[in-house]
Image (cartoon, rainbow, N blue to C red):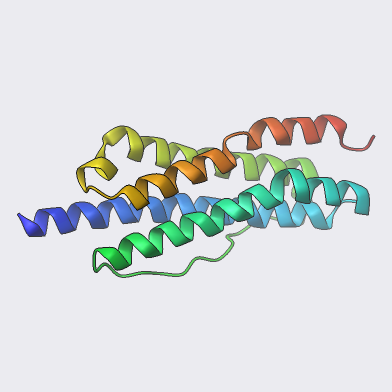
Length: 152
């Protein structure tokens, strides 16, 4: 029975890792968009989009590492992913970031809906996942608003 519980914890951890990898892609795409913007627009992008995703990326990593440590599972490090070619342009990078954040949310929603975090009895994991979802919950709306005001 202990083996099954440990296996379930590892699967849970792997799903959290998939969500973190998507946040890494979003960060890379937002970073590339930032580089293509004028200073004022870049500052808005950083405040409205990059910073919340960066905080979520850090919180998700901490949640992953703490859960792994509590249950004797291997930890890993995460880095920003591949942003895509520069030819995507600002709008393309923002679309890529929104898509990656959406996938991250999808993984976390499936995880939370599955009740696996409750079954393993880990309040720290549940709190961390909820916080990440809160941090990225309105990224799409913010990105849409940014694009609609882009260039003004």
